[in-house]
Amino acid sequence: MPIVLVVVCDNHFSVMLCALIQSIEAFHTGEGSIELFIVEDQLSADCKKKISLSVTRSFLHTHWIRLKEAIPGKMHIPCDLSPFPKNIHARLFIPYFVPEHFEKVLYLDVDTILNRDIAELWHTDIGDSALGAVQDPLVPTFGHKKGIRNFKALKLPPETRYLNSGLLFFNTEKWRENRFTEKIVACIEQNKPYANYPDQYGINVVMANQWFPLDHRWNVFPYEACQDPYLIHFIGRKPIYRDYKNLPSYSALFWSYLKNTPWNDYKPKGRLHRYCRKLCHLIGKIPCLLINSAD
Image 1 (cartoon, rainbow, N blue to C red):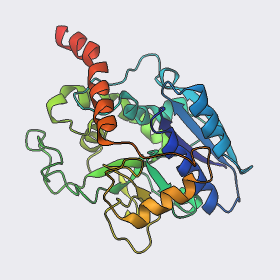
Image 2: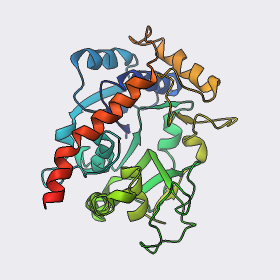
Image 3: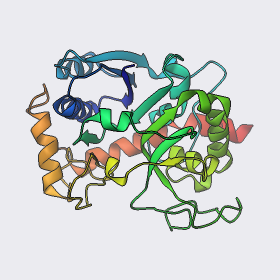
């Protein structure tokens, strides 16, 4: 059975996806193919071409899915108040748009790079759980100030472990059986003021104490001095921004992979560029919020 991997990408983060692809290729032994499903959010022809050219090994096969096509007909992307793009919610629909005969699927944020063969993660046994993830090193529990702020109202213990949604390992059949996507979408929309990281909020609340904890080295944040990180997750300031201030060794790894892609002459962007993107994301959500408020 091949390794099945899903990522979600727009034009801005296509540069990061290219580095991620190179890191996957660098560590995979080639034993077994990798089926890479790329959910594209209005990718330009140029960015799509650069991503395709970054795939250089025969074991890596790409499949393109438009964001609208990834959402089943009777479902919808939740409406939230965050400055994050709407495409962050695509991960919630993975067990529906990936072919059903794939019983398990890995999801990775595109702002990650591998430092280990992804096959090792793929062969991890998550038991009877519908989801495997890593406990968030920055926000370890619901009671943390950036955790589930309304955990008391939801009658959830403050010590409940809080997962980071940058890496998710799905048991697709169990996920569909429990209708987790529908429950998570409803949870986000019913708790908009508290959903600071909306997809992550919904997954944590609905799946409290129901997910399998993976080795923390599979989701190491860029400020963590981990001796042997399996995957580095560039939360916050990315290496593609001039104000990246986390561990330089991790940034150097990112640029070492990027130089082998069509983005090898990429120049980091300034802070204004990042803020403009967040503002555009918020503006794009206004129609959805107005419709919801009218209802």
